[in-house]
Length: 221
Image (cartoon, rainbow, N blue to C red):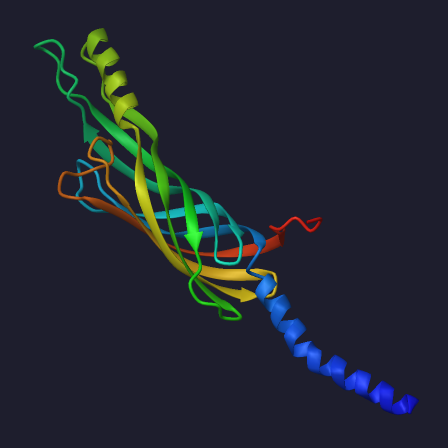
């Protein structure tokens, strides 16, 4: 009788292993806290070129729950373009040309995770992106002190902008590590130095790796 009870207990334990394994597989993505690195390309525009394709790299932070989560990322696109400023004050002033170098992005979005597959996890996100020109350099000399002061005000006003952003992607999970590919699109602000009147949307395509650093749920609750 003791042997039969031991055998029954063993069968029950073995039958529970797949369910436990499935729960652990789900926890590797759901209710988790990820840090990641990414690379890819950005499509934007400038006053000197309607379409600018630039390489980019960055890092992101993803908090997941059962059906939603929060996403934050910072990245930089590496480019060099030119913009002409409407900064003539005196009749002798020539409109200034400035070199516009690199574009930084800070993205914050609310995420949704349609589907419930064991390893493949598609997602969508909607939020805001803050875009900022990393550096501007004057080409040549300023015509006057008044022109310099006006140019600095224009650069400060047109150097950065907020815009709504949409993200679509998918992550494939290997235990604590996930490989992801995602695309994002955001409205091009015509008031920025990096913009073109004929270009209304900026976009990026990114590939990266995220690592699960732990649960996003307080275990004490």
